[in-house]
Image (cartoon, rainbow, N blue to C red; front, side, top):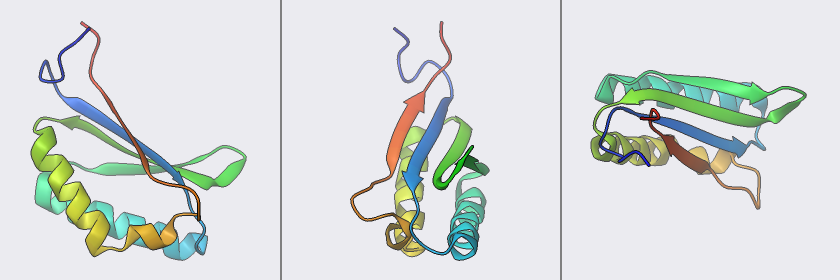
Length: 100
């Protein structure tokens, strides 16, 4: 099994949105732009095929996970992303590293 410090970490965060799609998209993209300015890590935003209420944020090649995660948490709070999440749902964060 690869150690988490063995190379860059890649983040995949998925959730269901309840808010107006245009407003939610603008809010998430504004958060991602702010996060990129702070960390240098640009995110991508995807939606599930056939289910446009399920979204995924992807952040690749994160070299300092602790700093990135603190900034991500701060930006999520600042942009009030919790208000976009469908009731009963949550943001699921997964971390991956390259296989050895």
